Amino acid sequence: MKIGITCYPTYGGSGVVASELGMELAKLGNEVHFISYEQPFKITDCLKNIYFHEVDVLEYPLFKYPPYSLSLSVKMAEIFEEHNLDIMHVHYAIPHAASAFLTKKIMGENSNFKFITTLHGTDITIVGNHHSFYKLTKFCIENSNAITCVSNYLKYLTENTFRIDKEIQVIYNFINTREYIRNKSDKENMGIVKRGETGIIHISNFRAVKNIKNVIEIFNRVSKEVKAKLLLVGEGPDTALAKEMAKKFKIEEKIVFLSRKDNVIPFLNSCDLYLLPSRSESFGVSALEALSCGLPVIGTEIGGLKEVVINGSCGFLHDPDDVEKMSESAIELLINKSKFEEFSFNARKRALDFDSKKIIAEYIQLYERIIKE
Ligand code: GMT
Image (cartoon, rainbow, N blue to C red):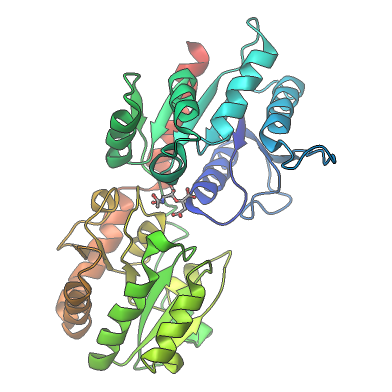
């Protein structure tokens, strides 16, 4: 098949999932064309069967905000025609699904242009829900050739928020379990977490929803009971808050700020436990990455995270504000070796349920069905 993919190219769950999907599809022999304002950071040059097409955005004095989404529509039409694509797959509703709808209209009734929209979370809970986008998001969902959501939670939320009757298919996010795998030598090689120390890790874009304050609060409590180091991978609006809190608790030397990393595997493998006390999470790809490397997850009983982490088996889930319970669960796992081993084994086993081979096949089946319709 020849597949077009549009996503946000920068750091963020939806762009990562779209890029990984494209790479897996390309490995299977499909031709994949990424269309965006920048090359997605995961898509390195010279990958077989992968092409990147940059959207030209015209700057003009009249435009206070250059209309990227319109230029994107035109680029989608050009690439679809030029490369004879079979299907277009857009990730994140706003503006990508709106641009794709416009492309469909530009291409006309006789064109075979069809597009699938995958909803990821904040495109429904924050952006799509906002009064300035609500009607457009609903319209895009109703006018996509197919809609997928990354969890049952997000499907339920989408149907209810936008009063959607159209069929929405849940296709869970996935993980390449051959790549994301425990490698004990990473800890030694990286040398960040020293021998005899426990590594705790959190990876995110440090937005309010990630509850960074509680990451630090939990670590502060845990580090009083266990000799531990906290690795913070990524950066964003709440990085400064994390630094302030580390100073306030006098635990700065126990926290390593690592900024953004293209490859998080050696950092996960340097650690023992993953912290994700998010206030909202439609799925939680980073938790799945951790599970695949055998790290139990201390997280929150919210949204789609409950569909990924089995509470009491491969991690513990509590209320986002219950710092005490999250800390207790973390300490319990870190001091009880046999319990830790059991949870770590279950973590890897759970990740295998989301293996990319299985989930990519679901996308391929969907593409084939929509192309035939
Ligand atoms: O979590 C973020 O802030 C990034 C966001 C995005 O849209 O890029 O992530 C969303 O999509 C991910 C991939 O499907 C999910 O794993 C995240 O749970 C989801 N984030 C939220 O729902 C807050």
